[in-house]
Image (tube, rainbow, N blue to C red; front, side):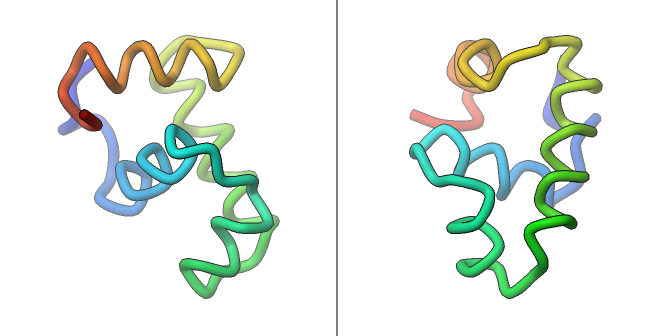
Length: 67
C-alpha cells in the first residue's frame, strides 16, 4: 500500500493513531467529530487491508509515513 492511496487527512490520522491517540483525542485535535474519525479510521484499515491498528503501525513504519 502506498501513501498516495490515502488522503492527506487519512495520513494525518494514521500519524496520530501511531502516536497512541484515541479517536476522541484525534477528533479534538483536528476539530472534527469522533464519528468522522471513526469513519476515517475504518476506511484506512480497509485500504491497508488490516483489521487492527497495531498492524497499521507496522505498515506506516514500513512505508515511511512515520519515523
